[in-house]
Image (cartoon, rainbow, N blue to C red):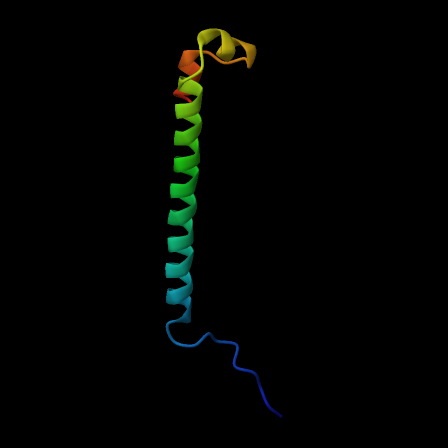
Length: 63
């Protein structure tokens, strides 16, 4: 009768956590960058254009 080793190799969990942390940092940076681009584009619109899409100048900072 053979039994399977259900334990991860030494250091595998640490490597997985590091990879997950790097992926999370990358995702956070991408979200920040996209929000920054959106804020820049909205800031270039006139007040009338912002009103047409249901936003005000103060709403831009919340994005």
